[in-house]
Image (cartoon, rainbow over all chains, first blue to last red; front, side, top):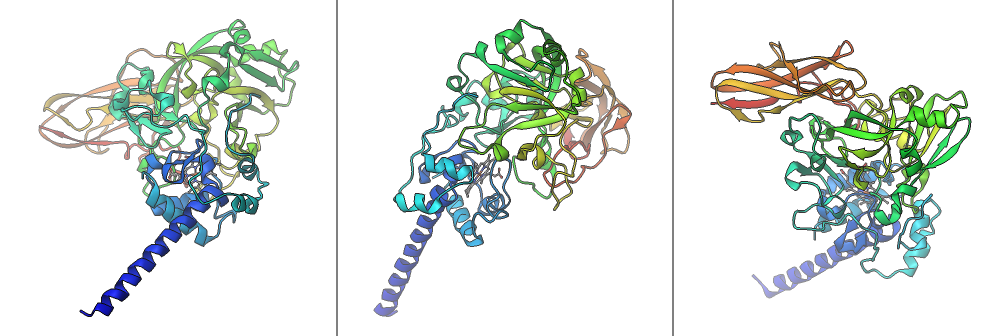
Length: 104
Length: 402
């Protein structure tokens, strides 16, 4: 295979890992700031020690689980989706972020 | 009420009460992991139990999260009263710390909706009257783990339940000390003092109303199974309306009010409503009186052939258990089990045993209790949040006899 191919491949890989890092940063920002999951949840990767809801590092939820609860809420947890506190894109971002980082 | 310690910065607090300036917060903070020192629930030892319940027995518990754990089915034991180190944990708010509670004897209970509204300290209550009562404490969601639509929340099977011996003061004595009810009350509304001050009471205050008729049997408890009520179970004072689901047994109780209306907080109006799948709202029944229920605790998986003692627990909520039947063939045939052990009153559970003669093979063993003219149904009552499951089929066990 040509050297060019590898060059392009390297660029693609670099680009997509940069995109992933960007998504991760966006997720953390949502978690700690706009959605303030941090006030109620502990998650080491985000530096949060909230204590109202379960420790997410212990829980290690799946993307679907996080999405479900962030959309509909539960008990003292707000329904971020139903009540329009976050957009569907933001819910996706923060859910992927939590599923990826919980327990790390 | 008491002031909670919280190092969460003020702008974060505001968000939770609904007046956030989100943009302002975002602009001011750099994108690094934040530091909020507000946890007492972090795992504290090698056993993997969170600090606030490190005195529990790890091997008796199934850990769903650092805040929710249930008793292993076999760890309920067969001595009627559940050992305190095995009892499940399900607290809607963070358990109050000793520092937040302060001097326990000075814990305050406000009483409203009576002729002479008063505030009592715990030590005053302890010198006013006393009673001891056994009740079944059961989370509304006990059995949620059997629902195929996988409702949100902890997937409890049988272990979010315990039979507890409480000591405290009868509610009726408290009412008398306040000159009687002021009239027109339809509900007893109990309020927990455990909500962190950065949360919005409308959304997070644990305040529950139950029909005023509970005043006949209800109590305020400061002792559980012979020891001072632990913080993790709502100490130093907990409201006990016997026969009602766990949520109504308000922990860290700071106020009792006799009210015309139900509380307007989310935990009363919206949460803990038994609604069809896909529907919700305050028009649906609240998780109040527990329906009749039983389950087998032994044998769990296998047994040797011959005489097999099948035993378990049965309770009727606010009604006395009249009988329990056991099936060894998946509910085709039922035989009466024997109620054994002490009868600790209609709010406690009864032990039952049935001696079956079993040949080697596979069996589906089930139990079905009756109380107040009602028997457990075969199937669960499907509902959105997976509450109040008392169907016998899901609670049956498959065992192999060799």
